[in-house]
Amino acid sequence: MKEFKITYFFDEEHYIRRFIYMESQERAEELIQSERDRYISFRDSRGIYHELNTRDVRVIQLSDYNRIDKSKKAPE
Image (cartoon, rainbow, N blue to C red):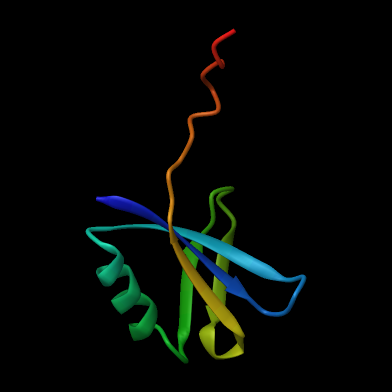
């Protein structure tokens, strides 16, 4: 499974990010397309619950995400 970051933009300053695991980018795109013009719900990385009407979103951006483990120290 690969991790993808979906960003829902409402305007230049307001957005919500969602992280999903899918087999491929094509599958992630299919998910986004299937959610078009309807309500979706999810929890973000901080555990905050969101209900979002995708009809109110101006731009949806999908990108492959490579999570970095911040708990590890960088080599000196």
